[in-house]
Length: 178
Image: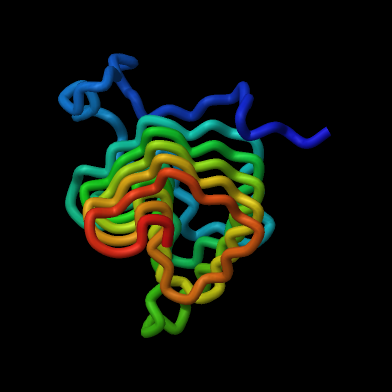
């Protein structure tokens, strides 16, 4: 049977000292990205993980994508994963997907399916920030994510989102959900 993203047993944590609490200061040493899926081909499958505790608080690009960063020809399929309590100083607390239309050799087009995103935070795109027109987000659940500016759950620039559920996501400016 398919893994249930709400009860995943395998945890990938950015909490390097295993000391996270609700206090932000306990997360300062956490890794910038729990998962880096850049430069991976379409045969890359990321299936059934809980990704927690990423803290993207460095300089660009390490200020984006606390849970995962996907750029420079990243084409993974991410399924049945849970992104929980990841944060970014800038964009995409859960996942940051970057595609540069001026880079001829770039081919960044991930698929995210049957995943859940809870309590991720950033400035733009609390759970996901994507500017890739070929990202597919399918049948995923977004709950209680926060963006300080735009896109409480998702900041989307042309991606395809289908069959997904949004609840209790907030932003201080535009798009509580998207």
